Image (cartoon, rainbow over the protein chains, first blue to last red):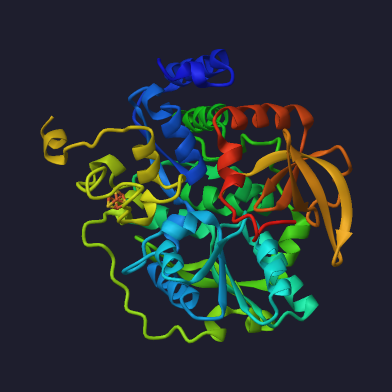
Length: 371
Length: 89
Ligand code: SF4
């Protein structure tokens, strides 16, 4: 029980765990979609506090981890060009491309800057009219309203030295892809709270009905995650499949309507490749034709890119919940946060990085198979 | 980067036609875009993600979350990395 005292309210955590223990009668596999939840689970040892029947499968909800290698390589090619200021969220700098990362480009003389908000990149474009400022526009639905606003504002201000390398991904099509995969084991999902703050919960109703799968909208704090799991277990044991909102303090059915309006104005749905997973139809956003002039892929010649993943990295299986990070033979050996072979070892929300950071030991696959 | 951090709106103003504000994260103050939360007023709490308020939050849950995040170093992680020059406001 060494983790329990780290909860904000250890008594409440204990009561939630007791309730789960009393309720569960058979094995269930629940996927937490969001990397922030994975981080919380591993940090607080929630997976180890739960009864053995409840297995948590870590989902693909870390934008840093699923941004396709081809886009990373394009980012590297653009950032290396003279006259370019390349702006990115900090987590992206160590993500391995085919043969280097953005930090390398920076040390080789590229002007790569870490920004906190896409509006900071817009300010840089205004202050540097003789330079081309490119923002790396990645993320899920939570980040998209910020990126959409930056593009809309660039258009309004007539900034012709600002562009965005867009690689947005969407949660519901990913859940659908997981549920339709022949190797799927997931029986219930904890949906990502802040994605739902923006998009609302209504998007998930069709998934619940079509696949008869409980979906519980869940927050990020350890107690939130426990409560989400508790509700999922109750539904699974009762044979129910409902959409439940366990993060009501920040999520409504309709979501953030002003944000959805700008998203609709700036982006349109497109097929998107997810790193380690492959192409998922209609699972991303790209700029609409009205905003194409701000698309960095149009502004810079980034054709002729040949991608090459590390042959050792098994993050594709990790992202699909087929392999736990510490079952990867490279985990903690060739692959660490300082020398990541795959994107899942980079961001603190990546499953491999969370396992490493909180000291999960490597598991020898052949031994654990025998045991 | 996917984290949203709760903060208290301590100033509201307009900048280049966008509703902006200053937000206090338990001592650390940052500029944020408030365009998506027209209902938020001075003194309200919101969740800020990459410099944008995405939803309103009641005070008690905001303070509890902030305390927890401070304890486990999330606040520093979220705001610490940006290049000073690039994100000066
Ligand atoms: S531990 Fe490293 S090599 Fe193994 S799957 Fe994770 S990122 Fe890839």
